Figure 1 (spheres, each protein chain N blue to C red):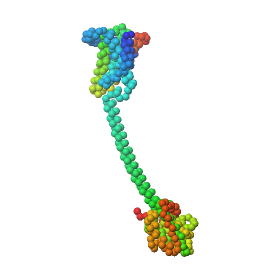
Figure 2 (figure 1 turned 90 degrees about the vertical axis):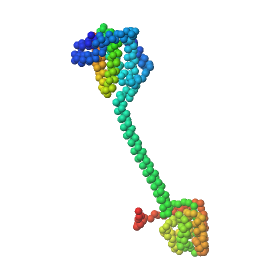
Figure 3 (figure 1 turned 120 degrees about the vertical axis):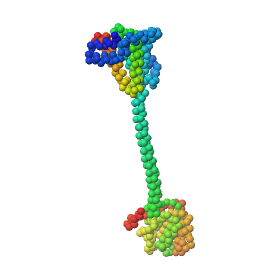
Figure 4 (figure 1 turned 90 degrees about the horizontal axis):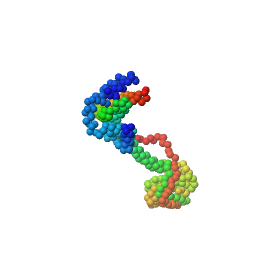
Length: 274
Length: 110
């Protein structure tokens, strides 16, 4: 008789069969004590005393219990997991890493594309801005500044002819003038562009529809030396003005400002071919 | 009384040293602890019944622990370690409940 078999007190009849089968199946606690104790007795005899063994065992139990509790509470994570779980977790992590790496690669690719696209559009924008500035200066829609000449035309006995002024403008263009404006004795200066015309009307110079009176001042942005040389050639602009008794005062300047603007033209017929 | 003191002393040692369980023993320790608890409760009950036997207790304690560990080991080898551990814990739990019920009847006569 073991202590186990007495469990079958009529306390909870419903549980008895189950409990009993469990006990019979195990019978670890000494059911067949007869056989076991005989062999174990010799073993235990070598130990000093069963009481000491019990104490040691119980101490071990407490030790293991605390270790296990602490172990479980400190890292309930991976170290307590079984091999299969660890393998599954690892493969999950690897799959996730794979996905994340793909995502990184995709994002880097799109970043690269975007940055090259941004660089390209940046370059295109700079180029377009540069072109727009150039064209704006040529078309007279932007003010210009730079080294150049300031010419003062003083008429002699006869008023200055429009053809002389046109000659001067052509000469300056030929010498590399990039932006020009002309102003009379009073009134606002007029920007001289490709389509500017000069008309002489009784001592009044009509420039693009603006009436200007002498003396005229022509402000030019361009290479000063070249333009001065071009104006001073024999039989050139200065010579012809002087032949009429007038004079041209040429001043080289480090910086001249061409501030007058011409109205942009709305083209009605011409369309770009592209 | 000495047994209780031993239990407390062991627990205190465990708290003091805070050893980490070797990886080899990790699957077995919880089951072994439960098996040992089962043996202890059986021993307490036998004591109350007046039939406590030192050797029997020692043998049941050790064999409980070893058999529990063995079952878990075999289960791990067979690939059903988790299920077998659960089974062992259930069986030991049922026995602990039975023993505790008997102890309670002794102590409270109910």
